[in-house]
Length: 331
Image (cartoon, rainbow, N blue to C red; front, side, top):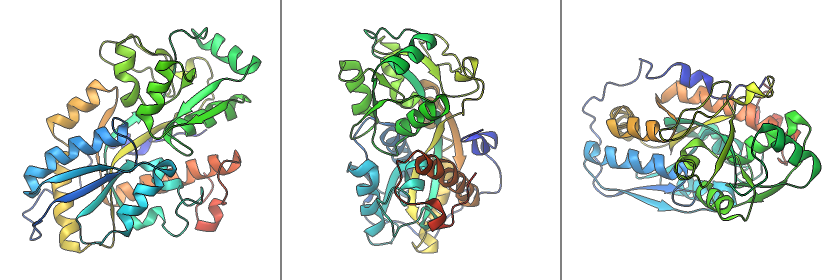
């Protein structure tokens, strides 16, 4: 059974990380966070809240630059190719960064080249356009069995695409994948009726669910989902007991090759920011979980993501490269 994200969520705010000491490195110019997706998605939301909190701690402005393209790999590569001095970061998700190699987007850049800093864990939610004849689980399955259903996602290998692949693969179904340049555009497309179904993240669908612009069918988790202003969304395992849980960690990615004094200062700033009231509020409003994961614990999350998602995409024929090429074990 594919169980995604439980390790970090089960160890929320674990001890053993820095207690925000006074670091020697103090930035002297603006820090740039490249979000390799369009504005409004989970990566963008998380990065903006973290940036706002970390600016005061580090004593410098942190600018957000959205650079979508190639399922986030274009902007992610830009962040990696920048001078490794601690002034250029990326805002992304574990699954995306962990699968760029197997998808042949960044074959020379490994997920092991990044230090991840995760602040939010969010599950995927199966939702439909409210005008769709799909109203519940049974009609959802019937639709997928009897016709071609258009499913929007943030792009190949993005969270919503992985959710759709897990859904279809485990139930022996097929669908028509419509990729967009980020989670927010995919959600908006479904609201507008360009597509019928979207399985993006709770962070990205929460507002549309509250406004009755999307109809929830199930959360891809073994537990029901509660979002403020929305009726409880049933767990997918209520209908398909063997269905995997699909959720993702969001936060910052910084090349491990930056100077150690910069890494220490960033780590300390993240430690404080990830426990802030702003992050707690973001999680509560978006049906997500606030976490504070970095260092070796984040490395373990990335290894889990590379194994789970890399093999899922390869076995389904989406990924071109075998995970074995990159020493990624099968889960």
